[in-house]
Image 1 (tube, rainbow, N blue to C red):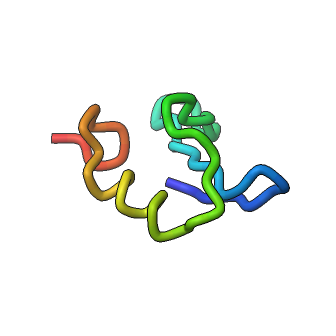
Image 2: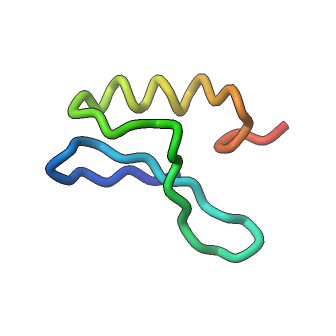
Length: 52
């Protein structure tokens, strides 16, 4: 996973394991609160960051 700060806040990215590219995690809106974004990643309801 990766994080990027821009004018809209912290944006979260996930690594595409097949292609090696980074994908924008569209359902996670940018947020100025980094801790909030980190909590979303830790929850990972869709298994994007921590596959089973």
